[in-house]
Length: 624
Image (cartoon, rainbow, N blue to C red; front, side, top):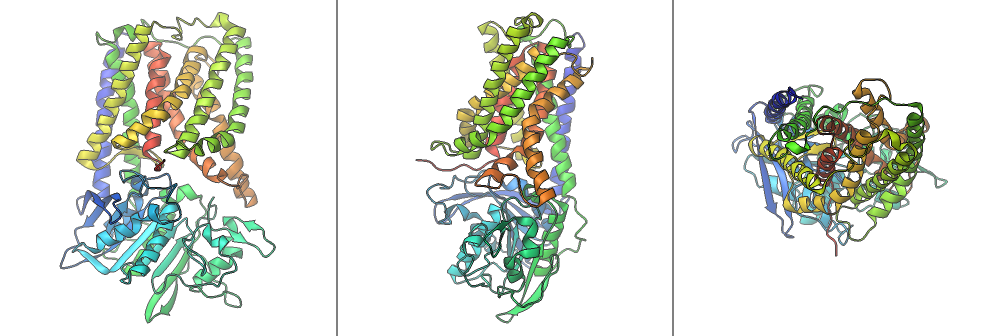
């Protein structure tokens, strides 16, 4: 224990260095090493909706030499930072790029997703972004494109309709990423509305604009096909059997009797005296991977290069966004080290020294009876966790007061599993109580000590987010990997994170920390504690792994998902994030327990952090 303070102090310095290195390198990459200016934007639309965005301006874009512009959009339950591979790659190739937050996402105002659904109100960001870039003196007004992933693609379709209605076209190219085009006359927004329009005449809804689709082969939500006998085929059959795909590639005409066109080929036709293109890219990947994909990035680069030319010529396969993402991840690792080291250093201060253990916690010997009880409990909790996920999440999403329906549903499921874990611990203690000293293991503690534990946890959480805000203020970066990110939050998002979501997540993460450390910190898997922690982490993730394996294993092997009804694909897709969140929480739990023998400290820290991270990376709605 004597050397622990010194080690923690060194780790604290290293963690800060990692976050600083992450911010510097990520900033250099996203600004193309000083050749792209980047700034935050916020403006109010005609409807009174505040839109947040990041603007990227390459140094070739000037009033004398205006450059093409592309508005990029994320999908549902995401934010603009989750789409930053497109701004990074397009801006370094000389395009002005505006990456928008959809209403209810990121730092934009909350949209009326309940009362305004279908009206286009919640999809306004892409068109408003196009209007905004059209006013910039260094943008070529004849070369403005839009692209969006999933709901962002739907927003791009709505932008085309708004552009047509305006009478003055400013959008000349549209790339839909994991979203359907508007294929028929009755189609209003693309996406699932396409199947509803079956039987209506095929139509070119885009006129002379250049249009492309990134139709992932294993998309969970779009690119479906309705057969003549009424069967709905999922995305793997889109290019093979969908008349929609062929009609799109034939510029909105009936494909019957025409040549069969292929994915990856750019087709040209003269429309209203202008050359127009149509293309469908069909990478073998899933929906949420498409905004983190080299293949999708290459398709985006190729499409806008074909539509607008390349202001700066760089090969499509030469991509550097991966470097930014890698260092964003380095920063996330730095945050984890920062949490552990800061909490440990503070345990050596006079204020919090009573929370520190006299010696390091070590793994107990696991007897056969304890092992049998653990295995039995693990099987029971895994089955219950997997079986209850869909109904509990769906119930939570449909609660009228939920401002963030998806996160509320997941938090509700997490709380249920936390309560289940508490019941299991009680039963385990009754059956094998001789092996667990509730005071020595930290389960029982005085209220004063618990109060200091809560205070220390709050200080660590606040300090961690001060690092996030510092990175954003000085470097316009955050700490993330794929769809898990620590990003800045506004007061409204923070309020939603604290109540009700933090209360629900705390039930799970505190129970998880108590279970892993006070009851199961033993030699299951050997004498090395990291093996024990790995086993416990995998068991905790077992329901998630099982659901993902069944869903996507079935999809790849049989061409359809195991669960495709209603909102099941959306619910299952959210689980990918927790394959990264839970291991991170496990590391924090074990490291802090070793030095404190206090399972509540790490549980409170991780519960609050997961609530903030989850609420900052989802979609909020107006209620009432």
